[in-house]
Image 1 (cartoon, rainbow, N blue to C red):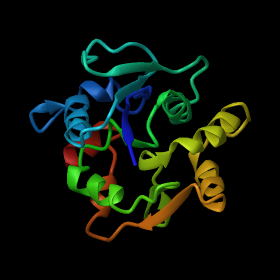
Image 2: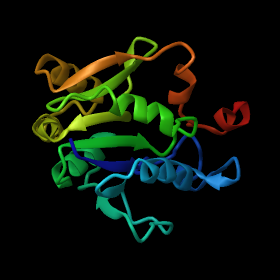
Image 3: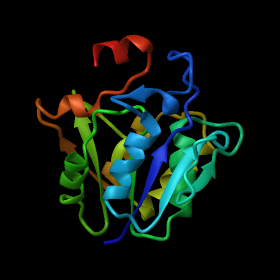
Length: 189
């Protein structure tokens, strides 16, 4: 098994009021914290998915821009799965600052050669901290040409076609998957 990694940083940050990627959390911008986790996993290639080229783009990452009109994370995942040369793609959203490298390694340890892993948090799939096989690209490409840009139906389809397995997250791991969407989320952290 080989893997690439993508940092999803293409959100509009409407509720936050400013670019979430540049928000400083525990002394580092969110993009830097999340990218460090992905780099420490030693992927064969690393991508940054965004709507526009960010000022903070690191030199060792490949930029993937959403095809207009952007369909949110669906656009980023579709572009990344189409771009990888490896068997799997690790996905991490920029706004999940509680995620740890140990948690992603735990997910990696459960991946089977022909499928990926999508965690279940509070009885709902968490597709933005997951691992997808390259073969999932067809499902994402089909979805982006449709009318429903939600990731939940895609995950359900991938489960039915044995492209991903769902993994229940324990009660103590749930907080790792929290995202920060508005200033109050940061204050509670």
